[in-house]
Image 1 (cartoon, rainbow, N blue to C red):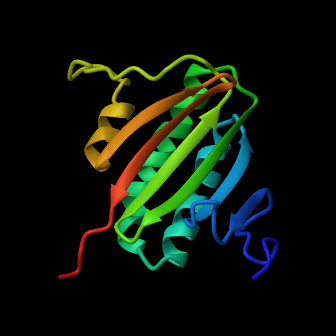
Image 2 (cartoon, rainbow, N blue to C red):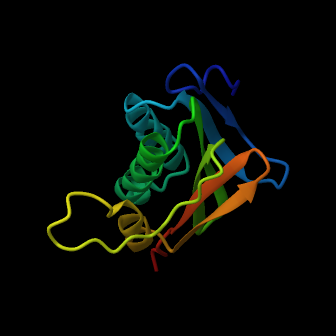
Image 3 (cartoon, rainbow, N blue to C red):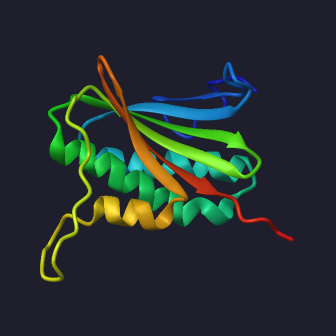
Amino acid sequence: MSATASRPFPGLTYARRSSTGASRYTGTMPCEPASARRARLLVSAALSSWGIDQLSRDGQQVVSELVGNTIDHTRCRAVRVTVLRLSDRRVRISVFDRSLRTPEMRRPCASAEGGRGLVMVEALSQRWGYDRRVWGKIVWAELLVESSA
């Protein structure tokens, strides 16, 4: 399958195997609200192609929150989203941006209108975190595929 033939929409690429042997979907999107939808479609396409649709709702929510945080809290022009199949039981969703500002977990009061994004990411993922780079950061969350046994 060529990279072009497997694109669910323009701007996204699919590489069968990464240098570590893991399957990956990736896309670069403008840092704008419409990109959250594009990121959800990317996650959905990746999970569906791997036959693990049961992670789709949680994966889409996680990527929406991570992309939304990038849009709301950085001045980046673009955001890169990667969905990586680390193993048969683990998927990593990563959002790359050029901001050096790191994410902060908040515990808002019940009446607060916002500030729950990372709380939701933490609840939906097996683990999450961020990696600093000289050019910015990568915020990631890992989802576990429940065993069918």
